Length: 460
Ligand SMILES: Cc1cc2nc3c(=O)[nH]c(=O)nc-3n(C[C@H](O)[C@H](O)[C@H](O)COP(=O)(O)OP(=O)(O)OC[C@H]3O[C@@H](n4cnc5c(N)ncnc54)[C@H](O)[C@@H]3O)c2cc1C
Image (cartoon, rainbow, N blue to C red; front, side, top):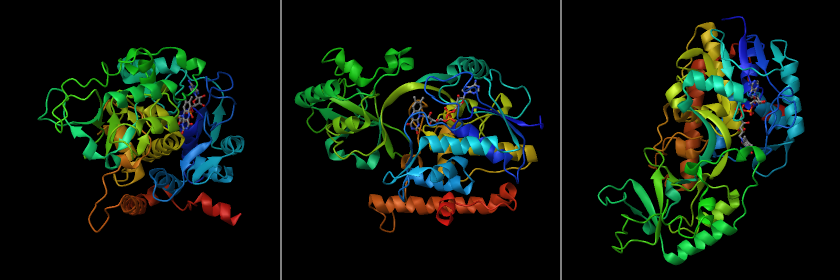
């Protein structure tokens, strides 16, 4: 069990996990199994470790953004991908964008030159019985390994397609134009309804048909389930398909007029307390700027701030809240941990963050110590809470780092504006993470000095 740790997958999560465990002061031997170039995924193009499959952006670097808080915490844990990102950074305004070639070259070299890591270029198709292991094979996990995961977790706990609707920040919705009501039940108001007149509905359908869509990759056309049909495909099947489908107004009379609107967009609470709403049935493959342009025409959504846009793509992920322990190990196979997009996080940075976390927990197991998770005020605490306990109201689906998953800001002391609230949440996260580090750093970092890669950049 203690000979070496097996890490399956050399993507964002896998390289972080391998680097964390094998660092000089931790010294745990790692076998990192990466199937490329022997077996390719439908999206990767090279044999490099840490390859970015699509955009070259690792999200915002702006102060007071959820993504920058997560990055700050990852840097506190010695993130390899952020170190590589700052060394290969290209100018991109407030985003941390990288030269993808340089980025993956730095990561590959760092892993291959590490004497504690053996890189094994083969497809891994099993789950070990007793060896400590991290499965970080990503959204395009090979079919043979997916089958093994399904056998271990139960077929119903493994998803292959991701069809997601946009999520909106609650405080960006104009409540004066919307109303709370459940279908046929005016007493209960779980849903927030945006009523559309006939002309507004006609314009929406026209926009959905004319808008620019994300091009379809061949490998994504394998199956398109009826239940995850993009809204624009539904609209193309007939002018009234939406008003008889997800936008059906029946049982949703507007209390202001006493009349039934022509069509209704329902917004479902995404969390408790409610800081986010999900656009029910609005999964979409329109380009993101198009989604914003079209959806902001819906009454109440003129100033909508989107924390996640709609998308649909091949994405293998597991029902983590059901099958994982808090430390990211599998409940019925506790020697196997899961990290990366497979756990139900969305995005390069989020995936990498869970790779570090799974490694940290394996390190704790290896050394027979306990390391608690940081509290929910931190980015790590809130992200891990979403994937292991799923406090949200909708079906479990991939989640990126956003302010909606943090506990709401305390709005006392004049923190009424959005900017003040963000600042407060950022300060609160910083303080909580510092407290957590003070309690745990000795257990994890020994005499190692974790440096902020941005400082190294300035110094060099
Ligand atoms: C088409 C597509 C486009 C995306 N675009 C973006 C984007 O623009 N921005 C963004 O933030 N996120 C994007 N994502 C999500 C992105 O994949 C993840 O954010 C991130 O790369 C996931 O990290 P990971 O470590 O979980 O998986 P990956 O980075 O995909 O790494 C998994 C690795 O495991 C290997 N592997 C798979 N099966 C096996 C096996 N059986 N044995 C050995 N090795 C195996 C793969 O070859 C791969 O190298 C996209 C995803 C897809 C599918």
